[in-house]
Structure formats: structure tokens, C-alpha cells
Image (tube, rainbow, N blue to C red; front, side):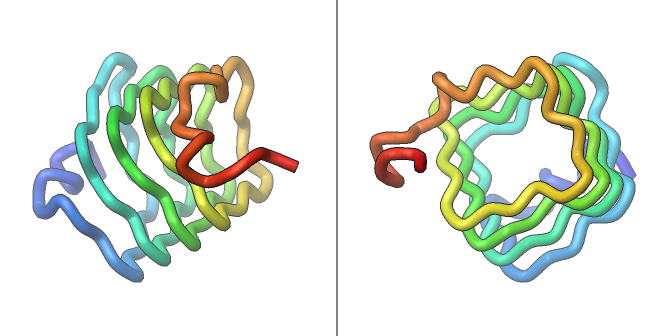
Length: 100
């Protein structure tokens, strides 16, 4: 499954994404993911801008060098996922509170 899966809508609710693989440098803008599951996806070196992840999970995903400009995370779980080199400081933390 490729990046065009995210072109279907701007808001995704309770969706399951399996094996989505984005090419390095792919940009995803303004998408909302509520209650979504990402299983064995690769967003390595992809860029998500002005996106929101709420009540979602990432299982067995490769998220290395994932770029998250102004992207919000709320109640998101990462299980057995690779998160090397992610710059969390560019995410929209002020919108979700202080990380614990």
C-alpha cells in the first residue's frame, strides 16, 4: 500500500492501515487520524505536516527519521516500532500538554 491511501480523505476514523510504505521525502499534509491502527507501516524519512493522531497505535512500524512538523499526538501508543532520529521538538506539544 502506498501514500495514495491518504489521498482518499482528510479525516480517518477507526481505520486500520497495514503495510503502508511511504517513499522517503513523501509529504502528508493536514490529515486527522482518530482511533486508527498502523500495522507494519514504513514512514521512514516521510514528513507529516499539520496532522493529528488521537487514540491511535503504531505496531511494528519503521518511523525512523520521521518528520512531524506541527503534528499533534494524543493518547498514541508505539509498540515494537523503530523511532530512531525523530525530532519530537517540532511536534505540536503545546496543544496536548506537557509530556510526562
